[in-house]
Length: 170
Image (cartoon, rainbow, N blue to C red; front, top):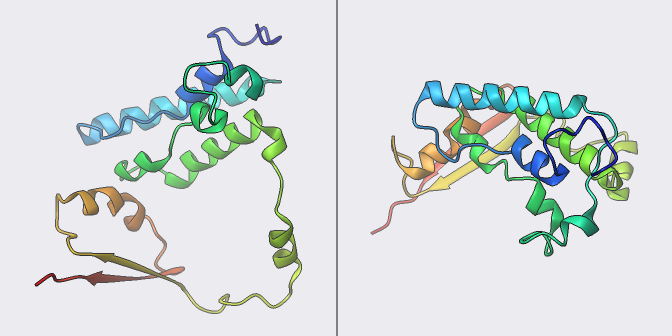
């Protein structure tokens, strides 16, 4: 269908969805580990298939694909924050590689980024990156805590200075 005999499981958009799909909230640590393991294996197999990309014109004909083929075919990484033990950088890197393969025309560097890379004097390189987390509730089990625990616990404290700001409503 897409000129690639290695594509045994059908449409490339569906393959991309499967390669970026995470259970929105795993029921247990074992379920989370199994989901990441399965996702990683599937993504690796998909990246081994040569010569595929996504045809936006074709995806636009699919139900739900017309408005934005990228959003339709490449699912959100938001739920990765629920996978506390996952190698977030490795999973995100695979997600990026899938998108780069699917839409090679998007694999560009913005001009303002190129200019920044050419500068010799970069601001903020001699100090940690400051990150503030502002919330009224960050208690154990609360959705704010559960949503961001994975991300915050994996931040390298040699690079990031994290400040928690608790808002108290009266």
